[in-house]
Length: 456
Image 1 (tube, rainbow, N blue to C red):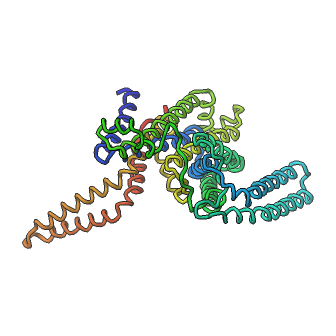
Image 2: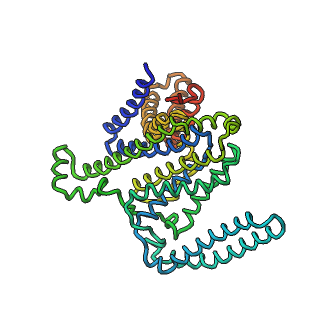
Image 3: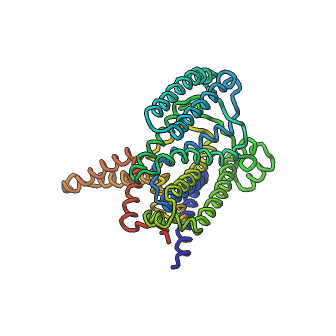
């Protein structure tokens, strides 16, 4: 079997699994797996750029995904006029003053000769700037958060179409990645992982606690949809032509409208994935891509050949983070809400890394395949485990009932043990996900460490 045929066969298996899910569990469940698989594939491409191309161990993926979700709120939700009138301009002024304080401290560090005068000047600028910043910032955010906190309490956004928020999410994540990369990319791989994980926790902590920004843990609801590509179910259910088509297909209007909306998202996400995959493939085959892999394999040799390793690392870190930001914006749009409490940096970053490793680090198609495989298992392992536990319960109960009092004590002990084991599995079936992910990762690393579709 040729490599192309094998890869096509693997993707066909994943497609068949999604179709089987639709037949057995309903098409709403199948399309939901498809949509989240497409978003996960985009995240995997971003991580694969950083790790597969350049060997950067970024464990802060969820921080950049969260920034993409924040961009949707800042770009696409309507503004809150009363909040802006109460303290919005004060918040903007204080943030500008904070940025100016940092810039002034950097300029002093560059322009003033090293010594006591430089140190005292930097400390003085930072202290004064901090107190001025807080004097404006604190009363401003208090005024903003006091405006109808049950449904508002934040500044809102610019009320632009949500499709504009997706590239904005990439730009916001890229800007944060540039700031992080300027300070953290000089660290060794293990220290870089710790630093990026800590920064992701900081980003998510800010989203949870700064209500003026995106309502914190009270969440932002009613994120607009990318119309006219993806409409609203209510509008479709009131369209006579759509109702006629649904009846022709044998579907009720409610089910048909739900499927139509989800398929609209699938089409949109698939287009974005194909574009990003094509760009990643072009980058991989270009001289720039070959240079990045040379840096990954031997930084010392690449630097000896005149390559600026730190600068190239910063480039790939920013690009990969931008793609994760786009995926985060898409995920928030699909959910229709921003829920900062749902971003769990270590847990879901681990999941994306498993996708890349299982699919094939350094291979973009492998990253996409791994995303679909792992996401399918992440969703289906729990119901499959519950079904298996139910079969085990029924079988062990039947075995126990069929044993007579004269049966051997060993058989009765085995039957009782099977009943207890099946009850325990049924009660803890939700933990099957993490167990399965760890088991898959161990098996792949032991028997096929290059992944399902290895790097050429």
